[in-house]
Image (cartoon, rainbow, N blue to C red):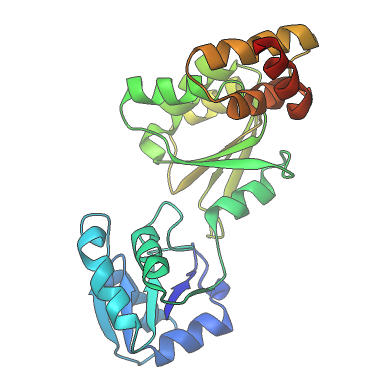
Amino acid sequence: MIILAATPIGNLGDASTRLIEALATAQTIAAEDTRTTQRLLAALGIDNRPRLIALHDHNEKDRAHDLVELARDADVLLLSDAGMPTVSDPGYGVVAAAAAAGVTVTAIPGPSAVVTALAVAGLPTDRFTFEGFVPRRPGERARMLAELDAESRTMVFFEAPSRTAATLHDMIAAFGAERRVAVCRELTKLHEQVVRGSLNEVAAWADEGVRGEVVIVVAGAERRAVAFGDAVDQVTALVAGGARLKEAAAEVAEATAHSRRDLYQAALAARD
């Protein structure tokens, strides 16, 4: 089978017993960076010398089939540099190929920067969306954030420290200066820090310089008070623009708090 194994995102003490046992007995490990895996084995005092296969963004498409074939006869442990594989890290292509081929996929759960940041941010956790890494190019970044303006769920982003300030300022332009945000850096490490406040306040802090690995957690948009008739009109407009009625009703329901079913039925009746 394919075994996805979560590795520490900072503190080695977060390595689970299951992870240590798997690393100590694995014959084949597919790793985002084999050097990082070797350092992890050494740091955990594991003297196992498994076959290491590099698996990263540039070769996953080519290697997915071979790894799945290996997993038909023996377990293949799949690691990213930190956290859970497939979550903004290599592994998805292998999992998809394994599922298509009928090869079992399981996981050794553990550390995740996404869930850790969400838990400590102090923002709503009942519903959230993970948006991955923010685009590097300013124009693409601004367009992505503009599309998320009406998102009512808490949003989690990865960002490089050198671009954190610029991204926060782009978030001000997209979401408004008073939207709540938490910048979580160096999670589980010695210099862990969570800076909370409005986008305006936290952007001013980031302007002084940010170091370490960063996760940005942003509060969702408040649902706007919209009359039901106007909400139905919004659904109709989205459908006229090419959206499917079901998806249009869901999008407007998310933004206005009206019932998705009621919006769907009303918009459907308006077409007749």
